[in-house]
Length: 175
View 1: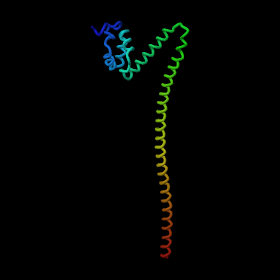
View 2 (view 1 turned 30 degrees about the horizontal axis):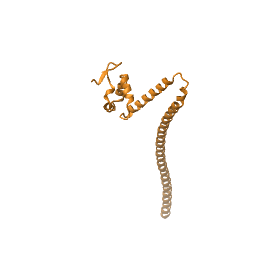
View 3 (view 1 turned 90 degrees about the vertical axis):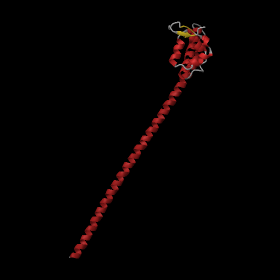
View 4 (view 1 turned 180 degrees about the vertical axis):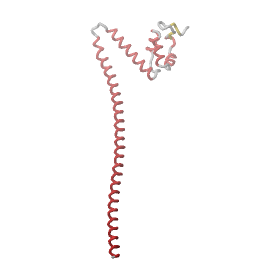
């Protein structure tokens, strides 16, 4: 028995549903693009892929699998209820589902933005602290320089007084 049949619309080969559970392990290692190509190859491949558990898929493939299943179920609900008065029965749960998804996404975005803002605040505080330290060092150096100048001025004045006094004494003795 052949494991592959001609693909309906893409001219390649489609995997038939007869492959069973071993196909789950194979598909679980495909990159997302190849997984989506596998699903798009034929209606049988899509039905097989969507009817099996996504627990063997990882990361982006599992997310894509879930989004595709959700969209297919929403389309199915719309098709079943199209034109009937019961469409409002599904409106509230689907709106709640969308609102919850939006709320979770917004909470994640807010947490990310809050983290980034806190990091910017810490960086700003570190920069302010660094600049304040530099300013304190500069002010301390300026104060020390002025004190040294005043001490030098006082020392020069005292030296002049002492020199003048010594000259007076020497002049007084010489006369």
